[in-house]
Length: 218
Image (cartoon, rainbow, N blue to C red):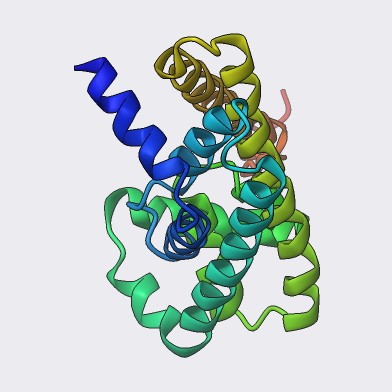
């Protein structure tokens, strides 16, 4: 079974259409996070260790697709972000809340961080569009986010493929394992920082009542 999967993946990765597919997946992942954009780029990176596809092109098309997808999400936020925010429930609502708080605290740099948080990137780009974040500033920070994400995903796969040249499946599992670990660590650090900030926030206490001396002097 594993040989059949490897053969199928190798056939896909050696096709010139793989670059179009990577762009499309990264683009859609920017506003529809169910699509496994990171997994696709890591997989291409694993096979790039064998020489095909080309690692530089994998990173370039993935970064461009992510950049365009984020801008489409930003556009959706500008046009209908308020309605989407109102309808969000559960984890989606929590992601929007996190994005709003993070934007208030750190501004555009949160866009770079959100690229590595599942669901966070879409909530952030939609929120930035909905709150009217300046387009030039958005494009600047998103370029950093998209390129760093493309390099990160492509190189994780590439080094996984280099470590297991004879078994691409193990290389893919290694790359995905690293990506999951980074996402978990990022989420844990974010949660810890949030709890720490809440603990350090000054609490407003009501003043203690002043006891009145009802008795007369003896």
